[in-house]
Length: 565
Image (cartoon, rainbow, N blue to C red; front, side, top):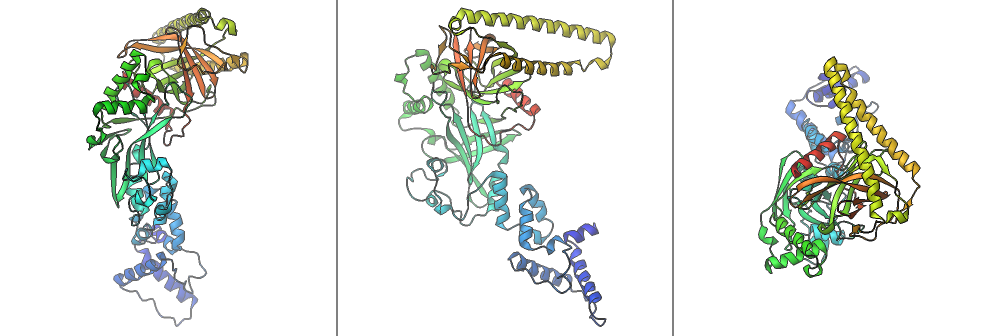
């Protein structure tokens, strides 16, 4: 401990350093040099504080004759600007512990440069607190960040809090660090509809952006987004939560972190969500935002019922929601395409968000947003990568019965293989019970690895056998919401799709065809429904959304599916 104290320059080391310096002087000076005289502890502490104050302010004291030619023995002997660089490279979570070491460290840690660096490196905050009044912003930033929605003009300083007396240490400790657990991707609990929320650090704000698919049926259009809530510092050491729902500007809200990977929001002024024209005006406004059209433009009666049902169901929450964390799927070099989030067409339900992930010989499409038939969290499609399909020529492909015959033959083959696998597994279980040898248990793991190798081999064989691209056309009688689908594809696989009645009644998996068009688009033909869904990749760089491990991602999928069920 004494050695550590001398190296760090804390505790009794202050006196030790002074006495050591005096001994150096006695050795290097004349024999009649003055003896070592200790000062009182209070005087030494006061002198040290005065000395450190001068050093922090930038005026390093000139070294004495004994200190001029030796390396520093303590961190406290380093120049203050060097200590600022060292402390600024440490994680922000370690700085409070460092401040408890001594008063000098605590004084240096008041340097705002340290906290500005931590805000930038850990949370990407690039704004300068002292120059916000001359910084221009985009329309999106003004919409999301302005304090008074009635302010339509003027500089940025008129619509932001006064940051003149705010410090980066306040931003880090009271805003970024305090709410770090809600950053990332989340799925709101809105019954069967779900949703996609991305909570990010946006300048000196934390904003929850709700991502919405483009208007049906334009699946290739970019995603839409709107802010649901924001958190920022109106005063030092006091973070303010505001609800952004409605059309009357930001108002008082509340956020509660329920448990790990779950938090809830509450609006304290729901009257801001109401409109002067009543529910009819609210419905028309919601319909224009959600669907990009009026009710008169929608002639399909069933579609009108679904739209009205969704408005009634979702508007009752008034932005008082519970969110559960979701992760982006991990990728592997053996994956058919890069996994991720896609937007796809679902008939009268419009566009929905689906997460594509790969699991050995299977690929799964999980709904992030859903509908009353197949709710969010359910596995909408499953692709068998071990069973590629060779499509007929373009003329025969137009015949739905020919495509159906090919798919049903593969379905029968899959059933036989599953039965054989079950019988083989039962035989192994009986032999293990008869032999009672624990050494026979690792067979399951080897089988899984073999299955993954088989799937990878099947993918490679399918891509090798099939041409780089082949003509594709939908069979006659198959309905598609988007007629602008690609006319060439890379490869096709056998798959199953989940269908159910209203309220997720009588769910069943039916055969279908997975069609890979390119790296960013794929389709699925539902044979029983005679329907085609086109999916297009969501090209948004979501922050703090990577799964910490494969196991964490699989557990997340199980959780959202169990909640949906």
